[in-house]
Amino acid sequence: MTTVRPVVPIIRNGETFPSGVLHGSTARDIARLTDRGLTAVIVPPEAHADWLDELAELVVTRRLVIARTTLPAASLDDFAHWSRTALADTAKAVSGPLLDDMTGIVEQVMATADVGRVMVRVFTEAPTRRCGFHVDTVPPQAPTIGAVRVYNGPTTEYVACDDVLSMAAFYTYLSRRERLSRMAGAGTCSVRAASSAPGRLIAMDEAPSFLRPCAPVHRVPRDATVYFKHIDVRQHWSPHPVTDVWIHRSPMQGVPRLVLNVSPAQPVPARRGRRPEARG
Ligand SMILES: [Fe+2]
Image (cartoon, rainbow, N blue to C red; front, side, top):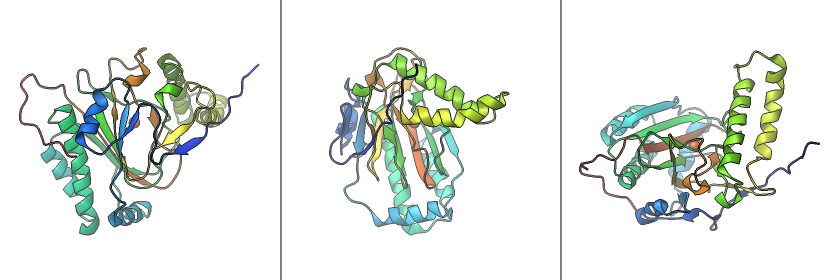
């Protein structure tokens, strides 16, 4: 007999966050991610800025389009060069504060991780159902704290570590969902399997089997930057503690969004050079 799991509710956070997630504002708060038991520090802005509304309008109407871009090991100069080029045709009233904001996040990840190069992934796209709940990885021996910022539209969803049954349960779910997602795309020879895959994906997304029954899915507040634990790629798929990762996903649908991901791209050097100032 098949057990039907109830659809999980989605909670939009205000001032309170579930266990393992801290509402922070300073570099010192972000540095606390090395604490056991803390998986993410959510840093909201002091106030909603007007330029974000203008940016959202540009992205939603596709007057600002950034093709999916990965800078695999960018220095601050590399990032500055790329972002000035990408935003060259965007009004200064938007591109100026956006450049400052994105650069601040890159600098903060560099300072927290004590590295001079980071992987940057950035794009404007509407969300799809291709990727579900997952954890982010870093290369072997790289520091494990990175960041995500969604500049407009629906924000990132995540779960509390107390609500996760086990990493084994999560990775079983992830493996099955990745296989189904490939089938829902073009990667299967079976017409019947491919045609049933989208419905099965929706069922997996609405009632994730790795969560305890009735556990909610949380949503990051708008305008917030999330600094969160990544996992060394060598530990991915292993039975590590749930508190070593932040399990999250993009929303499954909505308007085009500008999304920035930043993560360490290199191990901490044995002889450390000059590091950027932490931004608080
Ligand atoms: Fe992610």
